[in-house]
Length: 198
Image (cartoon, rainbow, N blue to C red; front, side):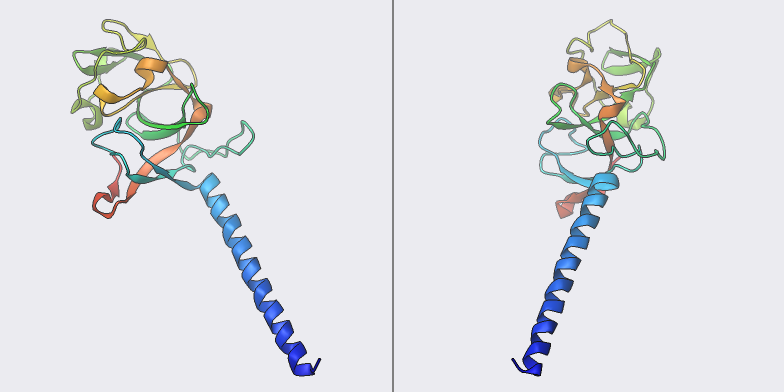
């Protein structure tokens, strides 16, 4: 083999090695970002209409609430705790294989009651637009008319914006903090739906 052929072969190997290294680094970065910073989710149902509709693809900030460390119960330090009105992605308490998205209504220790289509927290109607412009139905074991429930410590009460068509905390109860994945921040697809989620 001539010296020129040896140099060509070495160049090809160097280029191949660079490509492989670039792909591996890009994959690892993508996995770190997806696990700890931001992740895309697709909306499968109409339970959050009209805030989110079927087929919307959203980005969820996992860093804000303290991202979960995979295969453990540990979390990274949080920027802030979940707040009333946040649109939150979480692991469905009755099936850990499913992720749900709902609006956070009740914080730990709150009493929640649905009366005349309005959510009352600690005997006062929620005044924020994200709640006050919607009608909430008395349904399920945790949303019965005339019944107040107390949100347990380290748990949340979640409701869908489309109350008539949402399987939410009214039916299956509370979401433990350990199930929280992140805050929905933006719709990025389809193009005509791009917007910040409020």
